[in-house]
Amino acid sequence: MDLPQRLRHFVADPDDVPLEEALLTIAQCRPGDSADIETFRAKLDELARTVPQANAAAVCASLFGAAAFRGDAADYQDPRNSLLDVVLERRLGIPITLSVVVIAVARRVGVAIEAIGAPGHFLVHDPSTLEYRDPFNGGQVVEPEALRRAMTQLTPGGEQILAPAGPVAIVNRVLNNLQHSYALRDARQLEWVLDLRLALPEALYGDPRVLATLCERRGRFGDAATILGPLGERLDDDGLRNRATALLARLN
Image (cartoon, rainbow, N blue to C red; front, side):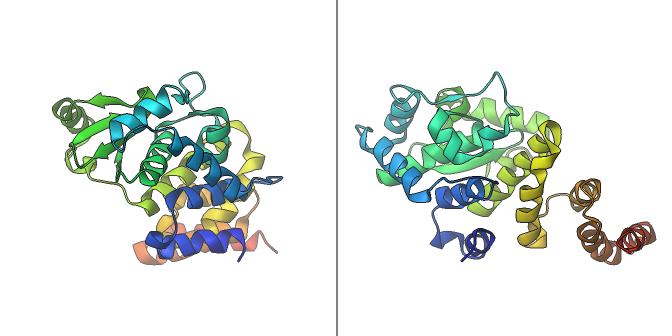
């Protein structure tokens, strides 16, 4: 099974594949990568062995204490922060990847922790204690009421946004982050991310117009047309249909 197929398998049945394996599969897709998934799963196993107690507080204390994981406040948009194998090597990441590390280590010590995909900032939630923790800021506890107020100010229905994020949503958000980071830093690196996105179901394209524009800028006119044509039909939008036709004409 090739790497995109492995990721498609995860999307089809996320309960059958650990979340960290899906993100490590994404990392393996980048050109020149030689990372072995089992090597990095072993690193997570090793981190779990240092946790003295089976609770979220102990997991966070171990990871953000002795293990020295931390948020990359100096270069947040660095694409390495979205690649789980690199995060495990550097012990530096952004909220979503650090949250995945917390969840993966907690799972190994028998603690079920949820991911919370709050707008612009990932958190984790311990259902047993009802505590929200912020992995980007050392796993510190965030007061629920303050968090709900902040989310409500950011967007209507903010309390609902504190609902747990499923594994497929996490995979999609990591791909969004990589797409954005490479678009800013090195558009040549977009190729493998675009390959991966287009291999997954259309529902995981994110904003299809943005994805089509990136494909067009990279000279992938057929891919851009394949995105915009069906979108134009669904929306009954002649502009999108015409743009798809024009893109196909550029292949001749």
